[in-house]
Image (tube, rainbow, N blue to C red; front, side, top):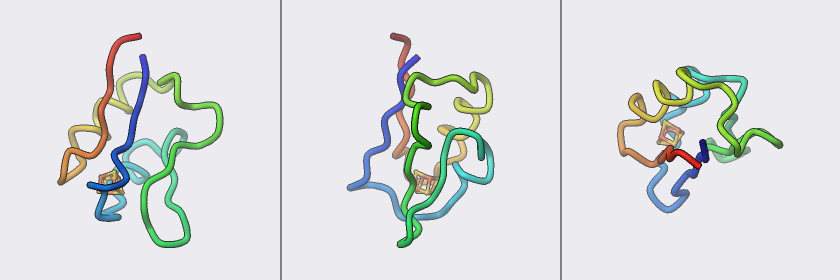
Length: 64
Ligand code: SF4
């Protein structure tokens, strides 16, 4: 699994970090960031849930 955040689309709503705090965090401006080493999608179902929860669909998850 591979996670990408489209930072041009992210509005800093924070739903991803709330839903999967072990994978997503927010930078000083509130925009979503992947925590180091989590780009590979470890976190499974919660990562998919976070992608669904994002109001602007900024998170894409694909099978590697
Ligand atoms: S839920 Fe979407 S808009 Fe909100 S911080 Fe995460 S990626 Fe950005």
